[in-house]
Length: 411
Image (spheres, rainbow, N blue to C red):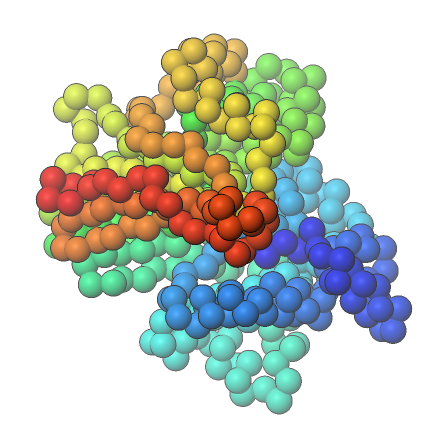
């Protein structure tokens, strides 16, 4: 879902819609502006026959990221203030939250949760649920802590925690957090719930927890600059850089990174620890595998991984590909440590090693769990040049295995 990068057909429909209805005043002509325009975008995005087939046959768990609303959504308090000062932002964010609830959030809830959901009951009871849903979206925008988009699903002895890393942010510069206090408490409680534990814990977060080390330290350094560690001039530079380089992953929310790290380690060290703790992410338009490691005597019983895969990616420029590859090197890690020192950033308690990648292109990552065994497979889409297909052709495209490995002794 790209509400801020629309197709030519959608742009033409938006122009007609606004002329006929007098809506979207001041809104960018190439971006959706209200609930009705969002519904058109969902219909276009999910109306592709192959995608309709996929959604009808494969169970899905969804969570939004920035482009569901707009690039850089909730990147900083200064950004939010600028957007709220425009004539069109309020209707845009309300329409985005309303449509997300209808098209994505409802499908994330179990039948039991739906039966207990007061908003769902109120919408069903109303002749027209628009105002009921709009009032909910207004509250969610005014007080993000009043709504929890994160959710938990248990599949036998595998637990999935899908974590909202967009709407639940705390943006005051001196107290920045990826998750507000209530959301962070919820995540820890769900991860540790149950005396017997689970065989596998999966944490779904659109933004990766572990990045290439140099990128991690660069984002931590940058966050320190924005907090004022090197004075107001560096802080102004930091805000400028944050928006242009998308420096807003877990590493850029230092306290939240450490709290998530501590939670995952606590789960892995408890009695009856899972065989694996896996963080599942996308966002960065390529794929890689990393394993988290702690000092001797502190290593969890569980193996702790970061699995990152953006299946249908935006093409990554060559310079960024080189940068992502370079970011895993020893030289890059050393450079990252120098940045951290400049920002007065402490090194994290955990280190991590690359277990595969980076891979670029359209790809599919599959995690197979059976009992306490786990296996990871990555397949990449390639074009069969022998059949005359171009890179953008569907005809001749096929999946080629690039990784297949066990994650546990039995796997």
